[in-house]
Image (cartoon, rainbow, N blue to C red; front, side):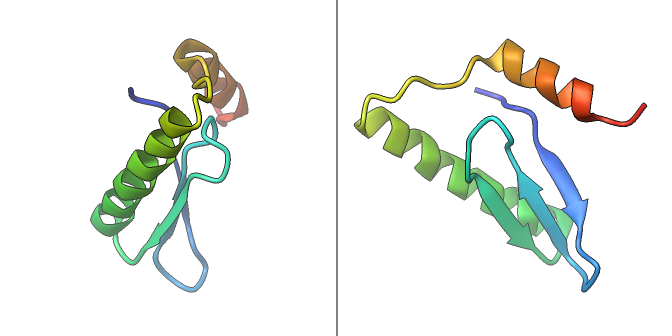
Length: 73
């Protein structure tokens, strides 16, 4: 499942990435490649945990819509 990703540059260097639809799904890295790799690991753990506890996943289309609303034009 491909939820929208938001990446922020950090003032001190590196990046912070999150998947807003998956509460608490955050990662940090020095490069874009590193932050995306870390986010993949965190996302897999998040989804495995949700499955383990029978949690319903956020709707993908609704998640995309919310990120588009928050994105600057």
